Length: 77
Figure 1 (cartoon, rainbow, N blue to C red):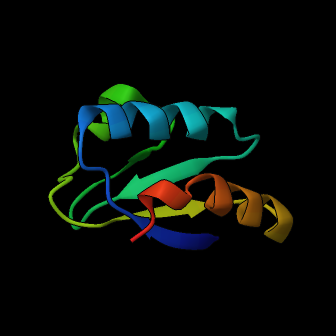
Figure 2 (figure 1 turned 90 degrees about the horizontal axis):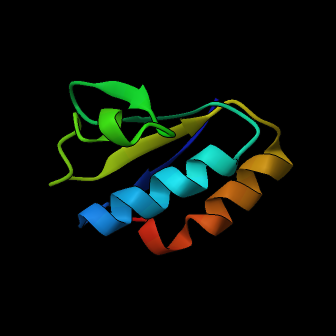
């Protein structure tokens, strides 16, 4: 599993990130210090503490991960 950190500063950021995560052909998980949720679920994402950086993890190939990370660039910490 590969990881990177993001910061989602607004509801629009969460919505855009979820839209991106749902287009991926692999599982995307996002976690804070207490919770791990499905990155493709708008409702689950609001269980997270978005005041700090979140860890995004994905089970995919290195090429898929690189493309996902690039597509998520505006959220990267």
